[in-house]
Length: 103
View: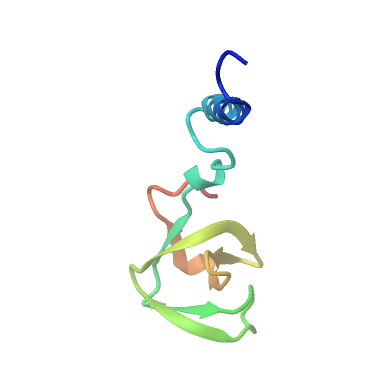
């Protein structure tokens, strides 16, 4: 067809569809909406206990010093915020960083 092999037409079609999807998503790869969200916390306590679950009775798995910065998630349960590595810290002893977009 038009002197272009069928395989070449398929490749051109796939690239065209990918380009349209990229453009329709505002120039970002598909599924990258979460990537633009930043959730970071700063420790405000002298030493902050990091726990395996959201509660005072959960085991302490590590500690963080004052002014330590960590990636976190938007999830808060029982007054505890989940960190990006699925550990928990008391919401009372952390503050969101200025560039955080989480709540």
